Image (cartoon, rainbow, N blue to C red):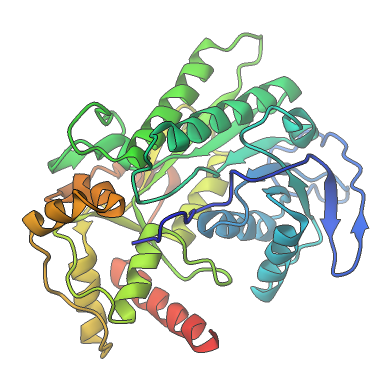
Length: 387
């Protein structure tokens, strides 16, 4: 489990709205011009025209992979960070992954403030809103997590609409579909009941933020409506770029490898590799059939941390345990531990996903769970060795 105060994506401490290219020793102002139409979504042969995507939460686990996929696919990327130092870290991380960062620019932005959003979105063809606060522990005040998620999403959408962006891709979660279910199969038509018992604050924040986005799209004015596609990942595994391991699944696997998780929770739901998540985000920018869709980025079959632990043990890893933690023990812990309380809603889940629309629209064959877990473990061990 992620520690208290951790974030899957950086999102809540940005301060200004200055544009800058990050270089090792100096800052170069960025002049922004609106790109010309380009149906391919990439560089136009023989011209300097390139589609630009505003990517919020670029420094996070999913955000970095989205940045890599965008840049490798020929897009210009304008990423949001909380500081110039964080922007430098993003650039160095991508460069270490052999990504050409020539067309990467960085802007400091505050999800909790209206300031600078229109400037940040100006000149962009697309907005990819990945940033959202992520903490396993239920906060004392639920609005400390819900408000940034909902308000940040609406700020991104308002800015996109204001400057004439044509398509927004929003990162949600399968928790917005199945967060109040225990068994069965969920699909894009399902919505989590945020009033149901044991639904975590994080699940509520993702559900309410996505609902706010769809309400905004349905109520928008103008002759050219802005289009929205939602990508809803399952539990996310996959090798990180750099040392960011703050996501729930990533952090849990790291602790398992270190032998610090003596028992795992009894829960199983669809998982996904972060590289698949990034590819679906980028493909959704220009796929007409994805307009107005909730795209499940997850395998059909359920997997859990016990399955992951068994795969690791079979490969010779000594740290992971396959012992199941009794539900009553976790519920007892939840009375005293807000992090444990945030996990209660997942206990006893055994859910499958109807991802047929994702497979059909995107011609998608997901990375296998075994491959994802083992490659993640290898990457984490390399990070541990350098620590």
